Image 1: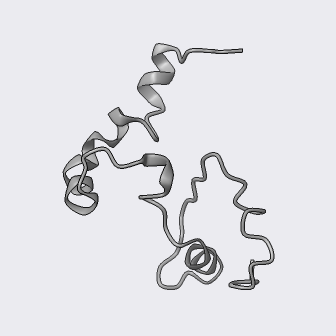
Image 2: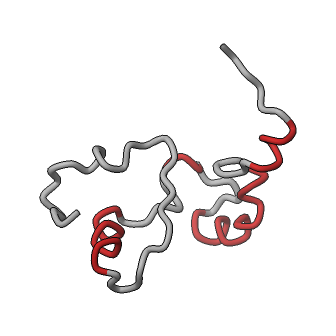
Length: 86
């Protein structure tokens, strides 16, 4: 099934789209040398172990929201040994 997004979807779900990344274009070009870096490669990803630790402890600051796309965040880092507190 090859479903095209509706207008409502296209306007409201901009994550990982060129339209959604337009606001970061100047900064992306400065850091990565291209205005449209590979969005799926994790250019905007926080360090997973640091995020998990901050979720539990609130240090260095509390995590108030967590958004994962195309990933099973609970199992992707299972038994890593880096952080076992969650």
